[in-house]
Length: 470
Ligand code: PHB
Image (tube, rainbow, N blue to C red):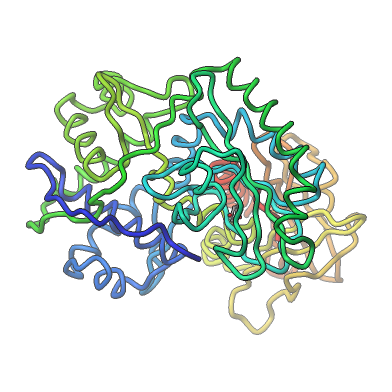
């Protein structure tokens, strides 16, 4: 994948910039560019910071839930998606125009995306994937250089159509059109993406042009009825993110990283621009602290000041969004299953409905001679398993805990539901153990707590992107 090119101009940070915040942002960006995981040693090398400094930054980020530390590795964790959600929420483009992009993808049976300008590049803010088996697929949060993709050409030339004839990747072709706000400025570009095995660029243009331009007209109507959506600004054309001056870390420094990150999630979709007082109030910070954080973000290109208001720029999506929007339910569940299995010493798993069966989508078993062996991918009859009963809607006493003997003789299984943002049961978390190992019911509290933790991660991750169940 082609990353957005690094900034070419380097200015030193202003004297009031919060160095630990700049360093924390740099760590998050490096992890994002590495698709979500880096060894701590590589992170220190990449940032040019002392290993002890990156370890302390990662410990702070882990404490905030934004990073998970696992042995030698640091990985981005689902709660960081709240930062991207604040940005996507504030720009309102995905919420307002996403359903029309989805409908266009259905009409054309091709992939469709929405992208906004980000400095000299573009950033995807909505993706509907179709027929992507043959090519790479970009996700929400991914960036591309502006001169190497259809939406970038649209932002540069103003339309009417931008054409990507395998600029990004051999075989990948795309046609993009600008979507204008009521004041006439280009707010985003909608792209239809296909493959040379299905179309040449001119046949793609002929095939999609009518529905694409109809979709653009419908999008412009939506924007006209909702003018604040056009409040998005592309951000500066160069930035010095990560160019922090070096200096001693202090305990206070790490506190300033935590406080500074709280400023980003203070933004939401109700009003894209916030005043300094509003940011301070929402983040629970003193005005002076909030002002220094905003100044730091402005310098690094994540926030734009307009008069008395501050707005997030799409560059905020470079802080973890793309790797986290590639995640799946089993990947979200994995660390929680490991912690639960270690805590209770039993085999725990996550299952999803699959016709009249349940399919195991993640399982963690303790290392023991006599452990339950139900592998990932195994399909069991729904009626015979606790997970199947839960997925079928059984919740006998309101607790949502269902216990069932079987599916094999001597096994007892206890399951609880995992619900999506809308409250629908999307998975069942179970503990399955030999009956001789005692009463399964004593695990119901731990099981419910783990299901709630998985659901919380799922909810923050799935706000703007679909999360597949395997
Ligand atoms: C996309 O993946 O949505 C995409 C890729 C390349 C383009 C435009 C869109 O030029």
